[in-house]
Picture 1 (cartoon, rainbow, N blue to C red):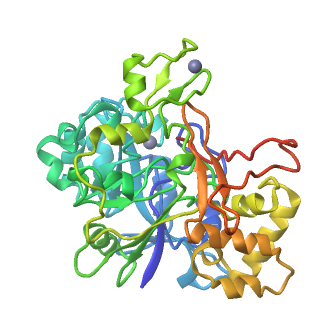
Picture 2 (picture 1 turned 120 degrees about the vertical axis):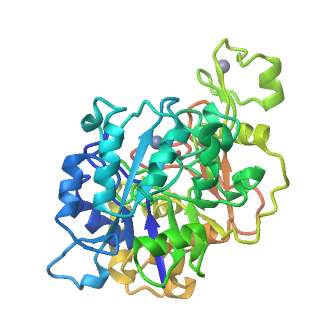
Length: 424
Ligand SMILES: [Zn+2]
Ligand SMILES: [Zn+2]
């Protein structure tokens, strides 16, 4: 069977999250999105864990009970947590059971006096030590948003080994983060054997956040063991698709000045000692960080699944109609599409273009063309950098040049559309 999974989110017990990051809201929103398996996030937090404990559990998967609905279509959860190590590198752990979560909580609390204060605990441990604890708890582990300029493995280390030491062989995946995709990571030899995860790291349950990146796996059954086998690509379980936003849209994609946003090539920035002509600091972009680390050609290894660049449906509708994603028009179309196709993933990934053209309501053909453009990779992005988001453009038919999209409302006339869905 094929499942869509978003394995990295945060509960309302993590800092800077929406108070609506609760289990019922997450279960409901994941279902509308088309996500069958959602990471719980924050599973070491005693209060969050006690809510999860209430759910029916089978083979390490927690079933959210929704009385009116068929149990099989209800959102399922798997225990996950993000932790920060002593060097500020973030790691994602995927756990097999409540008992192991309790065990890990007990062993970690010695290294984190305020472990109960945040759903994402900071631990006075190295990456290697955290991996050792994860191994003892039979949990999967890998670095989160590996290339972002802060709180990430390659921000502080030059290799996986430098971070995980002797435990490097136990790492089974790398979370790419919103500013990178497989074509970036496959240029680094040590990553080519690993599975790449694309997760949302959502801090709010809204459809423009939750599952803005997700993984599609082939499994036999929805269980912890099958998820583990899929990530490790064993027993014919495997990832079959990564879905994520175009990396160039990230606000630190290229190296650029954080004051005036002027972009620089890596060599130029080095010559200028990372100082802009305006005097501001040039922040190294994810693309240049990958350029520094790259040590092989980018042709993907055989096991690597395709990577589909998508943005949330409301953003695509907004882009197609030159309206804000939160406008009434866009929301109305979004609701109608969901009523007809069931989930956002069905609309964006699975419905045929013919079916999208033949909806029961009068759907603007520009919306279908925009969805098609994303599926076919016919979009162009003016890269972000220095803290400013990239600008996405849909290429008009028969043209190699990007169309300049202008907004009609909310964000003002004459302004180029700027997407603000990226945290990194
Ligand atoms: Zn993080
Ligand atoms: Zn500058």
